[in-house]
Image 1 (cartoon, rainbow, N blue to C red):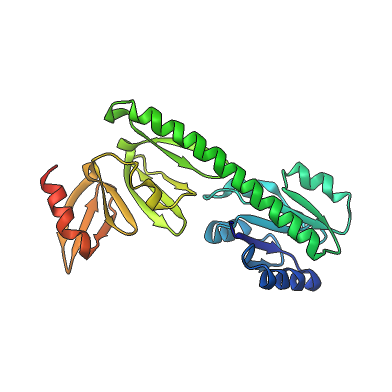
Image 2: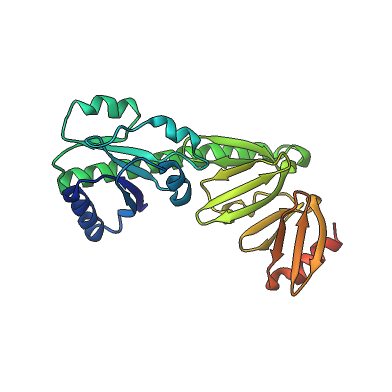
Length: 251
C-alpha cells in the first residue's frame, strides 16, 4: 500500500502533536514531509518536496487554490480541518478529498488517510489502462509517429519521441527535456520508461536517458560526458561506457 506523504499547514500545537503521533504509529500509511505555520512560499515547498497531500487548517489560514496553478509538479490532494463545520462547503469547493472537524481524532485521521490512498490508487489504475491503450497504438504506428505518454495524477500528456532531448530521474519522478526548451515532469520513475523508447535512445547513467540524435559531441575528461544540443552535459556511467560506444558506432 502507498505511503501518503504530506505537508502540514497548521499552527495548532495539539493538532501537530496528534499528527506526529499518528505518523509514528502508522508509518506504513502516513509520512510528514514538513510542518509549516502558513501558506507563505508553499508553492516552492510543494515543488521541492512533491507531497501527495496538503493537510490545511482553515482556522488560522485563508487558502488560495490559485497557488496550485504555479506548480511545476503534479497538484497534491487536499485535506482540510476546521473547528467550524461550515468550512466543509468551501473545502469541497476546492475539490478536497475530505474535511475533518476539530478536535481531530485518530479514527477520523485513519478514515481520511485511507480515503486519499484509495483515491490515488484508483487514479493510477485508470492511468495504467490509458497508457496500455497508448502503447498498443504506438506499436501499430511507424517509428516516426511514436509518442511517450507522460502521466501525472491530474493528466496524461503525449510527447513525440523525436522531440525529447533527454530524460532525467528525480526520485520517483522523471523530467523530460524537449527541443522546444520545455521541461515536462512525470509522476513515474525513469525505469518505467526504459522499454518505451525507440532505438534512438540510450540509458547512459542511472539518472539519464538521452536521444542520440541530439548528441553534439562526446567529451573525454576523467570519464565520458555527452554534450547535447541544448547545452547540457551529461555523464556516462563507467559501467555503461563500453556499451555506449558500441551503440554509437552502430548508429
